[in-house]
Length: 331
Image (cartoon, one colour):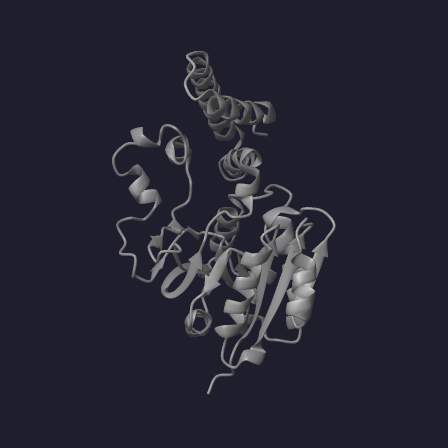
């Protein structure tokens, strides 16, 4: 009989104390079997609420990393991975795992055991994404193909409604049934199970390039580009898999929603940086020009509506937000 796998759950939190508590409680209720194989690491990114005190008081068995500054999704998770590695250093890297989990999530019964059983049965799988659900139980799309320049012009921009037929369907993998296990290019970073041997070979999230957004796409691309046998470039590469039999409720963007202007800056800047890293300076420059032009156009449109007296407070707030994006230069 196989030895049950060890897993360290890493949660990066910023000013979502109540949601974090619910997340940890769901992990304790729905722990792996046997439960002593599970460790929880919380990284607090300099919250101004009671997160640190709450974790220390209510969850003394949780490893807490209290950062003095906001290290973002990437830096925070790398800090958590470093702490988790200390907890798992004596375990076999091929059969022990890191589970990156957002604080605005609730793990459903059996999810962790399902993820681990699949990973143990498929040793060539480096990263697995469970199925994400909205609070009402509806399926949250979380599997993707890699971004290219053509898709980047349309996806999550004001041009999305004008995208060529089939372009975004392919990006969102809509041809695959939601309940089908399948290999994917990348999955949402709200919940990702990573084999430790994969992490040790490929490294962590790229915090030098990304603060938040696009970092999970970059990580999955690096993982899929890495031969399992690093000494043999011709050997099979690590796989990334979507596993809908494991489910996690995701309330979505509760931390980043607190700073919506910065969220827009980070999202679009990361898009440009991903393009530069994986497709070169020319394509990145082209995307940057298009995104800035779209924000400039929307700023002018909001200004005209403000002058016309239509919902002036809302128009002013939007103009301020768009101007901040323009000032950032998306670099």
